[in-house]
Length: 327
Image (cartoon, rainbow, N blue to C red; front, side, top):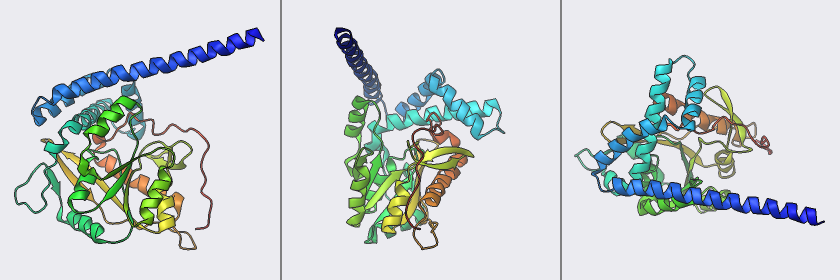
């Protein structure tokens, strides 16, 4: 009995020690990251973003995630040379560094004025402006989806510019201190933000029930998600978008941000998707989940250096999900 109690005590001690170590590591990493951002804040935006890009290209290539990035790229682009693969990987690190640094300059970077004749950092085509305005004026629920491309954080700000309120579902960083800092830096004009935690699907459903609009990121691994294919490889994808679209029979729009030279951006929203349906006329959740995955792949292929290849997108884990219910 005494031996068993001692064993339990040791296991509990190890567990508590591991938790404290992880908390300390998160705190140190966050302090370093926040310190770097504070220094960058002292520079002009263009200088800070360009500097972050240069540093990330050097540092990123030394990390374990760089090896994962190269492996993912090789499998996605078997026809490309090693030099081309390395170039895409370095572009990705530069893009991710710019995204991180842009949090502290959102108020200075976002200068969209769709009615101005003077071009700014943000450009939106007339077709996209018309779609933004049409959705804003439509008194029905809508779903807008995107991926981790360019600075995707600018999309809800643009939506607000056109009078469209969007509650965006997002996944907070694993580091709680960085997550808190990023949340504090987000623009108040970004609309509602909903962390992808337990109960998030019910919260989104409630918003759609009230005729609101929701935004979702659809390009991350989802444990126990539906099996889809992305760049010809099996992965697991969150079926939430398809399930909500089927239940509310609402329109689904793709939107993205494209990073341009000179720290500029192009925001695009495409015409609503023609959602696949079953024999009873209901939205086919599995086919819709694959359809939105295909849209993301199309965008990534157009500019692969603007997507986060270090993510374990193709790692299969958990129970494979099946969708029940009549189509």
